[in-house]
Image (cartoon, rainbow, N blue to C red; front, side, top):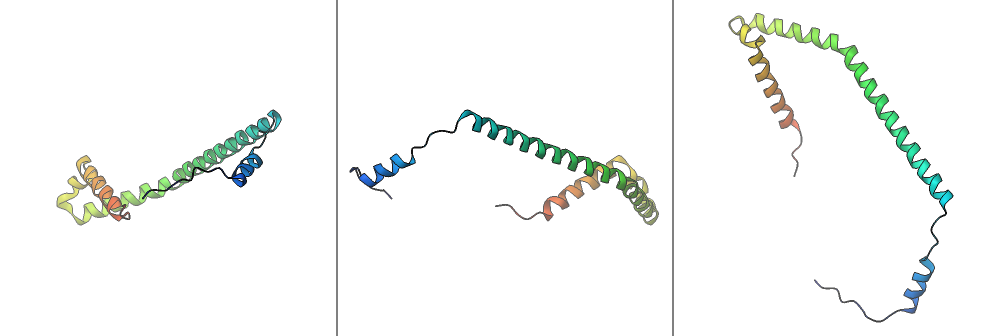
Length: 113
């Protein structure tokens, strides 16, 4: 599909272009604007650092519970499957469970098109 452009000049269009011609802001305004932008960046960085610190604290506070629960689940699995206890707690067992966990997480996400 082609758009045909007119070659004729319009007085109204020329008038609008003349009205739109603005003087650039002075140096003081630009310095104030740049300082506001820099301050906003510092505030955003501070918020991100605080959020990360809060996440670390939450992980540290919940690590004991998570590790205790994991150990009790592993003891239960080893007790329920005495013949497979060595495979469950071996590094290869942990590696396989991590691969299965990653596969489950990837499969549970909505499909991206």
